[in-house]
Picture (cartoon, one colour):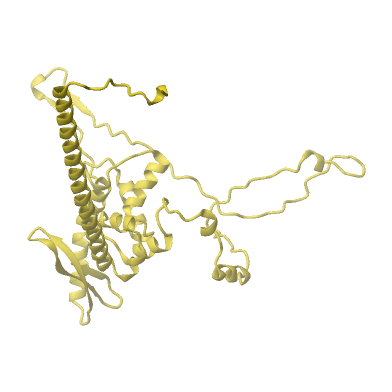
Amino acid sequence: MNPASKSSFPAVLDPVVAAVVEQLRSEMQQKVEAKDRIIAEKNQALSAAEAIIQQLKEALRAERVARYGKRSEKLSDLQLQLLDLEPGVSSDEIETEIAGGPLPDSSESTQESNKPTEKQRRARRNHPGRNELPAHLERVEEIIACAPEQSSCGKCGNQTMVIGYETTEVLGKKPVEYFVRVIKREKRACGCCEEHGVVTAAVAERIAPKSIFSDEVIIDFLVGKYCDSVPIYRQRAILWRDLGIDVALTTMNDGVLRVGELLIPVVGVIKRGLLTGGYVQADETYCGVQTPEKKGENHKAFFWQYSSPGKGVVFDF
């Protein structure tokens, strides 16, 4: 007999033992079948949940596209999600996002994205020439000396002299320098009169008194957002990339919103100036918003623009 064919367990001859083994085998089989049923039910529920999540994602994307306009259909879900975190999104920012393409985790190859288009190639052929840099910019000279073998005459061997320079102007840039401003307010007390107490220097006026950002940094956020169309979440990524500063997006948004609050009186003055004139232009744009009073669906809101030739522009939500 082949030893491999032998069972590792001895043959059970006792009928009672055989009955117990059969009962245990039956109970184990029932437990396995019960677990299989539970797993199948959970897989079915998971599939149903995934289908619901996909439907909600599609509905959320459709709602965001409706909010930001048809042009935003070209944006990825991640870009639309990050735009929702902005205190206010302009059409220029949306256009910049579309032009910038997907965020860095895109699977598109760098080589393909760097390939010039036909329009770019035509622009290069029709380029009028090198632009002249503005005269008001500071000029910093950088002299590049000839190599040692170029500094002697190839015929007589004597040292050659500098007779001039081949000059080329390029636009340079000094990197932005960030620093931590440590604000120390004096505390004074009289050494003779204890009852006089301690006095502390007054707190300096700031845009956002409790913010970790100084006024000039908050203003830089505003210039980036409203002049350069760089959303706040991208500026946050720049701070992390360049300085290793991981700051909450809400902290940056609070500074931007605080500036908006401070400019409310200015808006009032511009508005009064428009109303005193005899001609006002107006335009309305529908937008869907969510309010605590109307949960589960968007509230129909309007964004109004008032202007007059030669005067300011006022936006009213």
